Length: 459
Image (cartoon, rainbow, N blue to C red):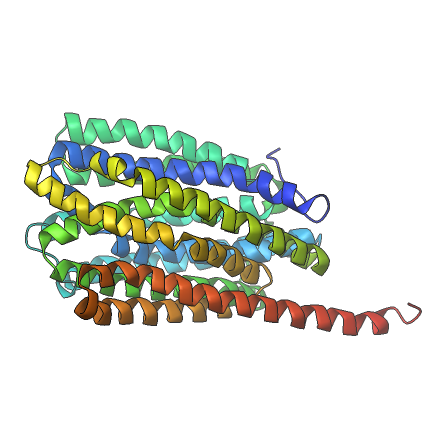
């Protein structure tokens, strides 16, 4: 049977780190094949092709983050049910999640394919890259059903404490992706489209491995009757999943506006900024992996009623996040320039200008990592407590700060105003989430303490 883990007993730090390490490794593998796409395209096809693929980042995230958000919401309820030993409720939640996901996938596929070209035009996409970016994204969007399956299956495994199987799945898909990249782009000459095909096929491999593991866990195998639409369960799943998906969309909207500002500065600035953006996922993964572990730990312990363990886990996770951010930020500030140079191959003068812009942006991101890593921990802790509304509001705050900084600061600071837009969004949303998390913990603790005398009169 696939390995699952009860996180309601034992050392919180050990449990969180043991869970987080496979997630970290898996996220690194995921970033690896994204970087391999960029490396192969940049080295074989040049700066224009690399810029076209990099410019797809926020639009890619805007659509694919919806399955990610829904799956995260499903996993919150699954973790709470598992922590509370409510296995019948868990099976019903799994079945209803499948029904919701099928309906959302159909609607999202239609919307994304229809709106793609108008949105690219609205973003001031340069004529050198707009066609390449559109073709690349149409292929990525065609793989939406695969992405939905992958996120839902891996989310349920994470909810039950199994972070090893998703790691194995990502390892296999990374090897497939790298091999297909070289074949499609290098040997078959499919250009940027080849990178998109390789990504979709690799995601399919990962989804199949996660599905095989889910089918082996009896707690995740619904009965036929569980597939009858259940309004109560659907409301709970929608109440948890849709705010997270909406939060992701809000953040994406800010990113799209920011990308439009970047595009307006011209091709060279766009190329340097987007090259650094391809490394953004890499420098974020330690924090997001730790946040994933903290969220699962919180969800299971909330289901078990262990508020004391939640507080201890949050405190330790925040301490680890801060130290990790300092270490990763220092490495990227020191090694960012030679790493960026791996992706940029063109005329020496053009490459130097692109590299200088990319490295400046990378240093600004490295300085803002402590708040970003804390943001991940406090956001997922809130979500594990069943609160997906405050994280959604933080997404609005990110939107306002990112767009406001991107539109106002360049007039005062030039390029540096664009660089600071990202870190301003992290700082504002992070501060809001920290305050919201402690407020909710105080309320939940007080409510549980108030119920205890009535439930145990002799206490």
